[in-house]
Structure formats: C-alpha cells, structure tokens
Length: 112
Ligand code: AMP
Ligand code: ZN
Image 1 (tube, rainbow, N blue to C red):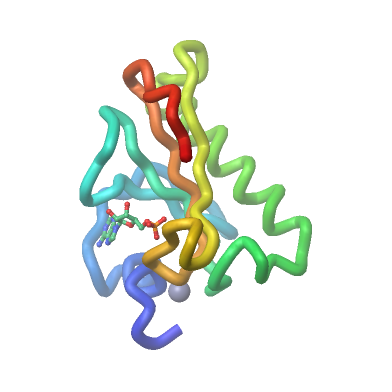
Image 2 (image 1 turned 180 degrees about the horizontal axis):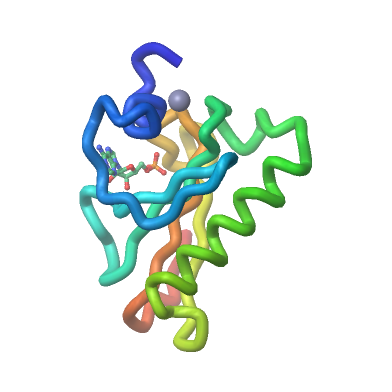
C-alpha cells in the first residue's frame, strides 16, 4: 500500500534489520527498542489493524513468525511478551498490523 511505512520496509524501499521472513510474514527489529529484544512481526499483505484480519490462516502465519523470532533471538526459555496495539486508544501508530515481540530482560508488570 502506498504511503505505508511497513509496506515500504517489506518491499525493501526502507532499510530494516531483518530477523525472519517467510512467504506470509516479515520480522525486523524495532527502530526504538523498548527491551533488549524488540522485534516486529508483520504480515506481508497490508492489513491495517487486528480488526481487519478476516482470514484466520493469516493469524496462524503470524503466530509461526512470532515463535520463529523467539527461537532466533534465544528467548524461548527465558520468556517474552507479545503485544498488539490496536487503534487509537490501543496506542497503534503505524496502521499496518504488527506484533511486538519483547524480551531479553524481566519486563514491567504493568501493561496498561
Ligand atoms: P505501534 O505504536 O504499535 O504502532 O508501534 C509502531 C512501532 O514501529 C514503534 O515501536 C516504532 O518504534 C516502530 N517503527 C516505526 N518506524 C520504524 C522503522 N522504520 N523501522 C523499525 N521500526 C519502526
Ligand atoms: Zn502496509
């Protein structure tokens, strides 16, 4: 989609630090990490928010991407947090669905 920063990253028009990729999803390190591991998993297809998923197989692909990122980053055993911000009050800034995978330290107990 034109003017979508994550579509541009997926297309390679904006550089990113790639962590994992398959035919459905792309994962790259967040530019402003909030934990030692902070990687974003995004669908290659432009989907704006969690509300806009209408094909459950896409969520399965996202789940696979999340688990691959955790494995590659070595945080499967230590544990990690998965966050999806959805919409304005959910704190979503980039309107291309993305899952934050956070870990590498003991994360804050507070989430809201
Ligand atoms: P959200 O608030 O859930 O929409 O999060 C958007 C995330 O995208 C933030 O954590 C940003 O730091 C991250 N971000 C924005 N631009 C880039 C970029 N060019 N490369 C990597 N991460 C980015
Ligand atoms: Zn997009």
